[in-house]
Length: 269
Image 1 (cartoon, one colour):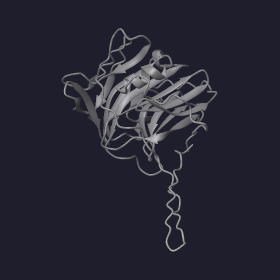
Image 2 (image 1 turned 90 degrees about the horizontal axis):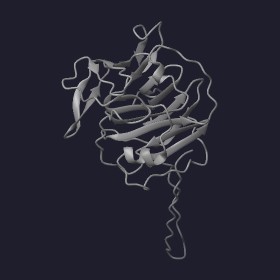
Image 3 (image 1 turned 60 degrees about the vertical axis):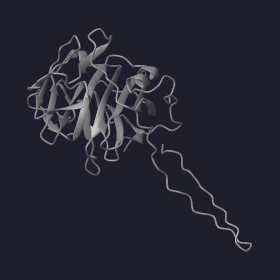
């Protein structure tokens, strides 16, 4: 469902005549920018299946998973960058990869994925860039129109109504539980869709900031559709975070985020 179409009617009385301007084209109005929030991983946070905050100093080949599963991420050609004065993120380019080993902890039937992203550019036309991909199970992607796409197996997906800006940090999230798939942008609920997923696990691990094209195992899986820009504080939960938690994670004031599902689900193209 597109954002509301706004009409502006201008009536000008000139010698008994009037003029009415044509309606404006529909436009995507993203949520108001929010300041980045410090969000280091907490080892006592419940239900965290993966937590990568890129605070390894120096970051040399491995990004630590600070969940108690310790699925440490193999990092290739990633560059540390500061998101806040006291918080480190990473920059990904066309040769980067962040591969998460295969883990039963990430084979989830209920889940939330959240992270901060800083797109340097939009993906190529009619293409997506991977943000988190567990092949055959669930995925989060950035579309060429800078909307967030959340997906499950068998082409079940939903696309956010709001786009994220380039050259700016935004908090994005995907959530699935009880037959409903949701997309969030900067803490605001931006799309909902009722789905019935199929159980089609592909045990090759996961990727951050890209999509994995499955091979025999993680080593032979091909990294494709890379995201270009900054990523920080990647979390995967084994349950659905509530709206208030995602609003707070985005650095928004309590009660300030949209929590109503749009009237028509945005299924994505």
